[in-house]
Length: 124
Figure 1 (cartoon, helix red, strand yellow):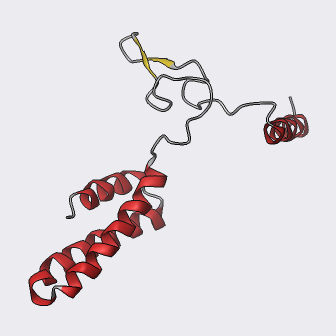
Figure 2: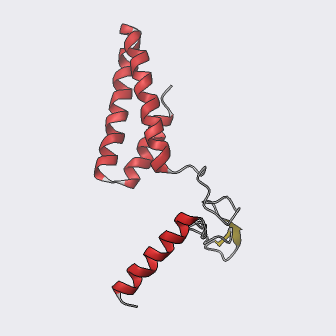
Figure 3: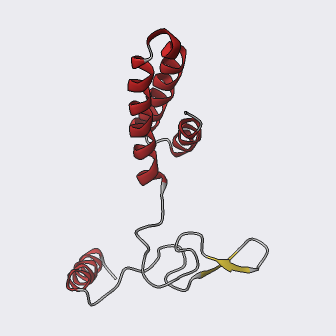
């Protein structure tokens, strides 16, 4: 299959998806709901939670959850700023964590994004 045929096939599939004739399948298990782990055992697909079939939009991803955590922490920074001296240290620590997360996103460094997400989750 040459590149023109492949492009035509992708375009046709996109048109069918737009009309609702083709449903988007889970990218990990291809709609089966099961995957084989490194030991040869069948396990539920972690992406679609074993439901198979259509991709579950409610499945949280790093790309959807990290911006939410950044937004939550920015709100925390405003709360700490309102506390004046008592919240100064926490405000600076939270600012640093938000800056690290934004830097990781800017670089496209997935490992750093995961670490930043975990650090932001600890902010209270």
